[in-house]
Length: 162
Image (cartoon, rainbow, N blue to C red):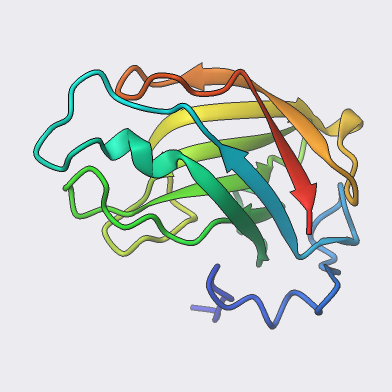
């Protein structure tokens, strides 16, 4: 099995200023990080873990990572949000290009190890057409899916290179 660069160690794929991976056709040169700020997400009723949806509020840096063979050409992922749902599974924000026509930003529940390449449950998704994507600029993305477990997901989010 080939060794891959994980989302927490991007040094092999990301020079200090930007990423230059041949596997990302939409952005051959792309920012090392995008910054995302979310607010207003909550649940109607707090459970045993308190308000798990509140953990989605804040400012998050999504770091470029290696290409994901067979699924996405390129992606960026946030640091893990540790198990807000008491399920033994961390959550992450993941921005990915599908290699065809869209970039999707997912708020997702990962596997038990926190592997960002697997989104077992997508709690919210924002989308932007790849033809409109500005690789080195700010991008507004529109909400296309929200799971009823959390409410108050913003209708639009902005990703800004940092």
